[in-house]
Length: 279
Image (cartoon, rainbow, N blue to C red):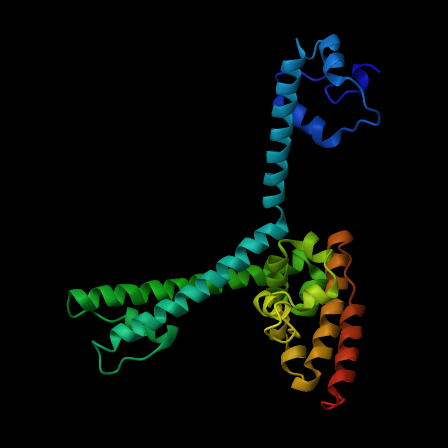
């Protein structure tokens, strides 16, 4: 066994990036006294220095891997959909606050984000109204940002997960990827887990024996589940989750577009809905 078999083969001891790459991409088929070999080859003056350089290389390799992962397209989509949801939630919460405050100032006070938009255009009649109108402007700005993020998600999701987006719609596809933590993680989940993503609290309550098993999670927002008779929603959710699981695997492992998945899902849902609540 010689230095040609070590991860440090041909490396400059001071080149941390090259060492990290060697740690990530290299391999060692047989165990050996690598510290001794590293010293003999001149990579390190002693065993302690070898371990120091090995530690530095592994840390840099891990940091590089994390950075690469976080910059991946599916992770950018995760951040976008989470930001969209945060903007919408915050805008709605602040809109309620604006409506409550406006009720103490104006006889024609309304509710909701549209009212906040209208209020933001008013001229204030004093310091209190100035702050209220400024807050209404913040609500309008958050709502606008949410709309912009939605447009981004609708454009980006089909590039990241074409089959999943075609079956679920871009926004729901992004939410499923986000709930799973990434496209790869989603692709590895069984369809039963995909079916209840977003219903973790209900599932936990069920496991504790204090609630029935949830039939669906966030996929309830899909028209094929929401638009099915309550008696058959469990079947519709299972059928949808099954196809979504297949779509996620194809998107992650090959990226090929498979239009037949949509036709198969349409046929299955049509059969379920035609039963007229027989389940």
